[in-house]
Length: 177
Image (cartoon, rainbow, N blue to C red; front, top):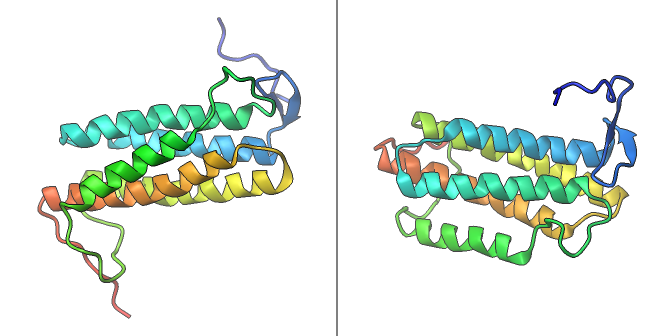
């Protein structure tokens, strides 16, 4: 199978139902931004912390589901879609990991150890993906649970960054005003 098809040379691409859309459509922007988050999460692994790496591996699989969900304007019952349990799992992980952290009293600078800073970068890109997903939902029918997932994921990536930095012995820095 060849990687290149030449079908996108005129600025259009196929959705999963084989309809053709502009590569600049809200749907493509949404799942393309999610792809970027997924690639950044992949850059972080391995962090050196097995439990964090397992969560990041699961997150990458969830992000493939988000992409499939956005790429399919008419999902069937057996198609991959983001479900409430995906969001609930992120919340469970954050609640568990929060026990390792001091309560947050100020904003912190997105920095730290190499994996911690990369997780902060992934969080920032996840917020952009969320904004693209909101733009999609404002224009077309799409799964609102996927937007919830991206919102919660950016929070989870923030918590993961804080935990990794704490485990690596890197103190958090607050901005000065």
